[in-house]
Length: 578
Image (cartoon, rainbow, N blue to C red):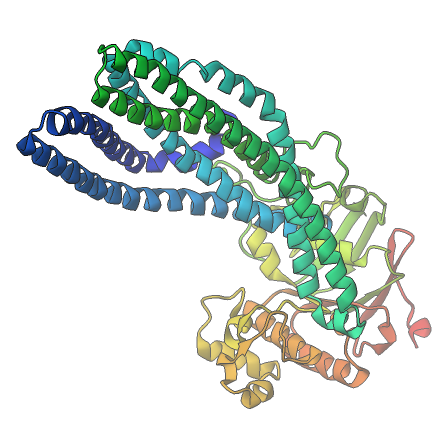
C-alpha cells in the first residue's frame, strides 16, 4: 500500500470517524426531509387552506432543524478530536523522522521549506484524509437520498437536472495538470518566503549593522510578488472551475423551471412539487459539485502528500541535485544507527574506559565526497589532552562527526573503550563523546532548563552544582531570577563566554568519557579562553580531552599535539612545539 504510513494514523480513529459518519447519515436524513415538508406546506397548508396542517408542518420544520443542530454539534465534537489526533500524529511522525536525519541534511535543506511541509503540507493531508473524505461520504449520502426523492417526484425533471454532469467531469479532467502544477509552485514559493523570514529574523542585528533594511524589504517585496503571481495563477484556474460549475448549475435550474413550468401549466405537476423539486435539485447540485471538487482537492492533497513522503520514505527526486526542494531524505539517514527491530543484535550500553583509537580509518568519500584520512591509525590515551590542528577544510570536524556516528567511515574502525563505536547504542555513544562548539545551542527558556538539556531527570540541586562548577553561579547571581531567568533564543543577553559556561555546565551533568572542544573557544579573547581552559581541565581532568584548534600554541597543558594533513594524524615533535 503506497500510503500505508498515512493509513496507520487513520485506522486507530476509525471507530470515532464511523460514529461521525452515522451521525452525519442521521443529519442527512433530517436535511432531506425538510424540502419535502415545504412541498406539503405549500400544497396542503397554503393552497389547501388548512391552518392546522400548516401549523403542524411548520412546527415539524423547526423540530427537525433543532434535532439536526444537536446531532451536528455532537458529530462536530467527535470529529474535531479525531481529526486533531490524526493531524498531530502525522506531524509528530514527520518531525520524529526529521530528527533522525544527519546534520548534513540540514546544511543543504532550507529550514523554511521543512517548516512549510510540517505545517502547511501535513495540514493539507489531514484535511483531505478526514474533512474532505467525510464531506464526500456526507455528500454521497445526501445525493443518494435527494436523487431518490427527485426520481419519485419526476424522472423527467431528474433527467434534465443530470444532463450537464458529463460536461462537469470532462472539465475537471482537463484541469487536473493545471491544478497540480500550480499548487506545487505555490507550495514551493511558500517555502521560499518562510525560509527568507526565518533567516532574516534570525539575523536582525547583522541586517541593521549593514544598514540593509531597505534591501531586505525589497527582497521580501520581490518574494511576495512571485507568491502573488503563483497564487493568482492557481486562483484563476480554481475560480474558472467554480464559475463554470455555477454557470452550468444555473442553466440546469433554468431548464428545470422551464420544463416544470410547462408541466404546471398543463396540470400534470403541482406548484409545491416543482418548488420542492428545485429545492432538492439545489441540494443535489451542491452535493454533486462538492463531489466533483473532491477531485480538485485530491490533486492539491497529492502534491502535499508527495512533498511529505520525500521526507518520510526518501523517494528519489528524479535526478534533482542536492539543493533541490525535492531532494531525497534517504541519503541523509544517520549512518550506522541501531535497528529498531528487537531481533537485531544487542548494542553496548556501557563504556569500559576512556580510551579512543583509530584503526586503519579511511574517511571522507562517503561523508563528503573527498578523501580526508587514508588508512590512518592513532591512539588517544585515556585521560590525556590532545590538540588536533590543521588547515581549514582538512577534515577535523568531519573526524569528530565520525566518532559520534554522524557520518560514515569508508573503512576501518573507531574504538571507544576498546569497542567499535558502531557496536554502541547510539544514545550511549553520544553521551560518552560530548562536543563543545564555538556557538553552543541555547534554547529559549530558563537558564535551569538550558543547563538541564540532555539530562532531563537531573535535580535542581545537581543543576545548581554543575552551574557553580562551571562558574555560572556568578552569572545566575546577577540575573533577576537566578537559574529561573528566561533566556532568549541563542542565549540572547549572555556573553559568548557565559554561553560557553552554560554548555560546560550542561556537559558536567552528562559526565562524558570523551570531551571534544571543536574550536569551542575561538570566539573568546585570550584571557577568557585561558580561564575556560582552566575550568575544563579542572572539572574534566579524568576525561580524555580532544581540542580542535587552529592555534595549538594557545592551548595550555596539552599532552600531545597532532597535525591532520595528507590523510594522516601526525604527532608534532616537542622541539617544534616549543
